Length: 117
Length: 115
Image (cartoon, rainbow over the protein chains, first blue to last red):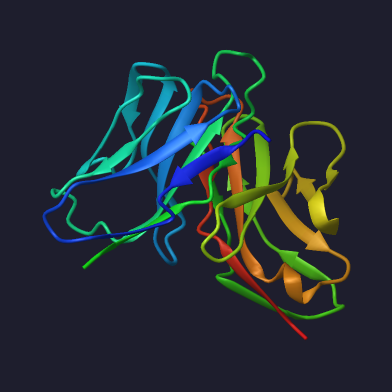
């Protein structure tokens, strides 16, 4: 079945360590997104990518980095510069922005919960 | 600019009663509107969307939503709630006239269905 796979599901990190969250999709979508979810704050956009080898900062990019070397993959690195990294992270994808059929519908992975000890 | 508001942090309803989760939006053009549901420690699942056409949209699990342009609302409804409907519900909007293809999400409404 087509979908988005995020791993790991749960991750614990010591302060000062970088961690990388994986996101892989087999939906053949061009656009991919990373969101952070905190209780009561809804979803906040971290980074997004419209196409391979291109990505843009979202609303809360500080302390995070991404790469988009393959269409299927959009990994997120939470760096030691992120002051409050404990959160639930969601990866999503959508069809191409230039297809003429994009309505804004997103397809989400199951999420990764990062806890900093 | 596009924005969406979910005025209730939490909605409580008894099993078997009808439920409504409210959503209002603001766009400069015409909207694409969405509802998603999230169960604990899971991703968001798509429920339904309004693109154009009929104002009453039917979606998954017996949910429906009514697009009201004059009130700029897109409330989620279900005639008879189930305990298993208890979850976090998100409304989202994308402005057709806007330059961004990224939807804006509401803060979410926690639906609690009591047995």
